[in-house]
Image (cartoon, rainbow, N blue to C red):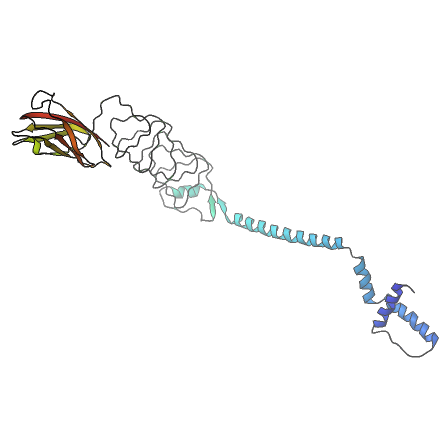
Length: 330
């Protein structure tokens, strides 16, 4: 007996319909064996086993793919139906002659928000046009008169022949290809970089840092306030001191009185203090040997600070007038 027959006999023994008797009759046992064979052929368990053995795994995969495809097709059809319903809800209404006649001289409402108004021909509005919602224009816009906008946002490139702006604020970079003319003042809070020369009739700069050489085609005129000056003991009795110029350059005039001796002649105080002790150069205007100056006097700076300087003389001067030109550079 092979292995399949043994399994079939075991299955038939487990079946509830099979009745086992203890009679030793050999003929009855053969009849029972034939009945068991018939019952084995019609047993539900054995039929399911054969069917399960014959089912292919690839067939199951094919069935799953078919079911998934049907689900996807159902979802797509539902979406398309919803979009079609939305499009069908916006109806198109054509203007009849009666509707146009009602619009002339009267305030009328055409259609409802769900309808779309289409004007096939050109339209001319003699009065004002008010659009409460947004305006979408598929083609170009041409304005024959003035255009007043509280705000404008341009996402693409724009070209203007002439634009007059009362106030302009640029958040990003600005590139000017032509000449930029500013009628009023120009204020730059940050750094400014110029690739070419700068031409200006007047240039006021609080602080100027120059990394290269300086070339002046005209005179240097140092502006600013006039420093204050006071006389020292060396100007003598009745002597006076005056000054003209600025902190950078000027002239000091000393009128020497009687009984003058050596010492300080003039104390100069700058209008604005320098960052450090400046370099001061003084030059007597009167020639030695003429006027109050003789060959025995020597002029020098007795002090020099960031707030001023002092001119002194080694010996007394004769009564008269003597001048000094000075230059102070930080």
